[in-house]
Length: 266
Image (cartoon, rainbow, N blue to C red):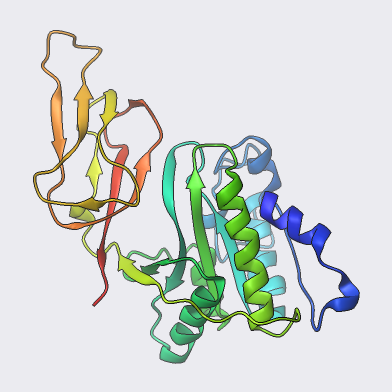
């Protein structure tokens, strides 16, 4: 939201060769609670598409986005972060769709945004997400994951604002040049590469998003504070990969994500 608010106050409508629609908090009730789910109906907007015009509040928002906003757009950007739970290495997300022309348009948007990392969503993409909604509407779209932890970061917010301006320049909506940037492309093709807590405890993290994972390398130690007589458990990476995200939580529950590990797209 900070990057969008900066952009809204920076753009002069008289200088735009087109229309820019900015929505700082698409699911405002959830945002006000610093939560992914709405306090009004317990629903996650990014798992609510295509929505329902006669459904609950979140389903109605999803329906409005898919049937009203997306068809008006030539390109869409959905800004995300890891929230309070996770920290993501800043990246853009593209849907690897069956329509090759749409996929290439998605990639072009990501390269225009300019971050050095692209996360390609393949079989792991959720049909209930806004990415899937854009694909159904045949609209080029990217999402982002921009850090996390529940706060703002000056560098990450600045990069988000710059990326949005680069896209607008690339599309000819704002004057100026913005050369597409080369980026590393990764995909979470093997969910088994990621690490999850095997029990409740305190995760003593030893690796971070943005680093490389190697088989047998220490990812952290799980301290069983509720069973103090139990030796701590070493958590090790199982395969090569790139650490896309790490948990921000100290106290973790069984089944919670510790490290999200992706593989290079070749």
